[in-house]
Image 1 (cartoon, rainbow over the protein chains, first blue to last red):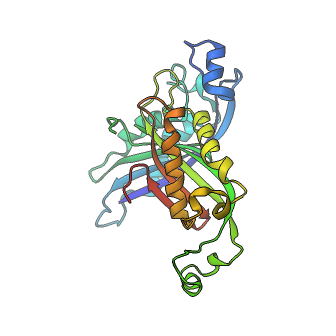
Image 2 (cartoon, rainbow over the protein chains, first blue to last red):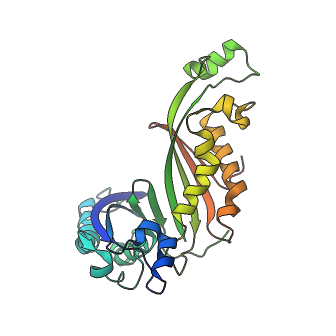
Image 3 (spheres, rainbow over the protein chains, first blue to last red):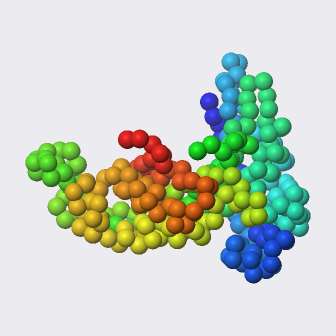
Length: 141
Length: 144
């Protein structure tokens, strides 16, 4: 069974690769590369897979999940400029893909339990653009 | 592996009416969707692609490239059109959202390599909402 909890935070970022010229960044990232940054209202859906506990009937206590998400995602990310304030984005381009990967790395150890594990992360950069990530997996056709 | 999904909107009219069926049967099968002058919807289309991260950009897909492809193949030919009359594929195929998903998949797969010439990203799935209450999903390689 899969349970999903949603959290929101607002943050600013610049998508640019410091190894490339300003022109090249502009070509690759468009307005996302504007030098002073810009922001999004990010929405993150975290899905945990597991079996309901025979006593509580829950895969996981949603209050506990909410506290974990607040502590490990919202607290460090909310109202921050990702490139300047939230490692690893001082050296990793803060695309939604890299954010999904970072969120996975932060949550995976927190959500492991005898009967449950992190299943997927969905990051909405806007309502019209979102990323799904299931952890590191080989790319097959 | 990441899956990137982009959401698009278009408005179009259609009429569900199978020429092989009698008027009465069309009425029975399609109900008000078969009214003779057609009707319209605000369609919401989700296009998903999957792939590994590009090591330079930190992205699995360039959204601007997908936008160009979908605009050219789907939004420009479909938006504010009568699908039965103005989209050749629906001259003989009933423009249900199922068939619309199949046609959009055909168009995107056919033109995919023009915007994405490399091995990755690959088209992953198409999802269409005809209204807020009806959704239709098809995998890129799903066999019907």
